[in-house]
Length: 204
Image (cartoon, rainbow, N blue to C red; front, side, top):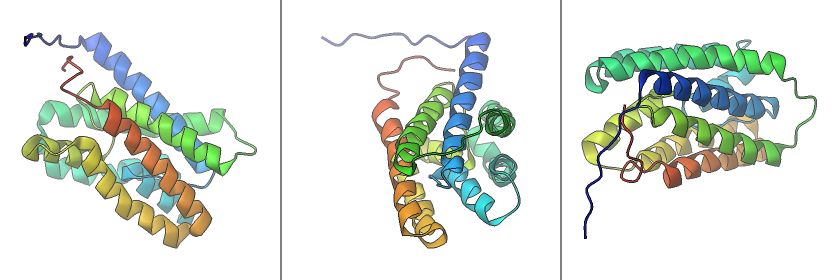
C-alpha cells in the first residue's frame, strides 16, 4: 500500500542554521586537504590546485571561480537559489580563512587527511544541498543537469571531479594525486549514498 507523505518546508531559521553549519564543515574539510597539500573535486578542488601554484589562498580563488558560473546559470537556476548559493560561497570563503588561521596543523597523515577531509567535505555538501543551495559552480551545474535530465546529482559531480583529479596527478605527482583521488571519491560517495530527495522529504 502506497502512503502519501507531505513534505515539510524548512523555516528561515532552519535554512540559515543549516547553511552556516554546512559551510563550517566544508571549510574544515578544505582546510584538512590544504594542510596535506591535496585536492579534491569540484570548484574547491580547482581552487586548491591553483593555490599550490599561486600566492593566493583557496578561499578567494574559490569565490573568483564561482561567481562567473553563477552569473551564467542565474536564469536557469532561479534567483532564490542563486542568491543563496552566492551567500554560501562568500560565507565559505571567510570560514576557510578563519579555520586555517585558527586550526594550525603541524603534521598530517595524507591517507587520513584524504579520507577524513573527503568525508567531512561530503557532509558539508549534503548539509547545504538539503537547503536548496549550492556550494560551488560545478554543484550548481550538476544540480541543474540533475533537474533537467534526471541523472543523479552525485554521478554528475563524480564525472566532473574525475577530470579535476586527473589534473592533480599531473600537477601534484603520483602520490598526492592518488590521495586526492581518494579524497574526491570519498566526498562523492557520501553524496551519492546520502543525497536522496526521494527519501529526504523536507524542501526549501
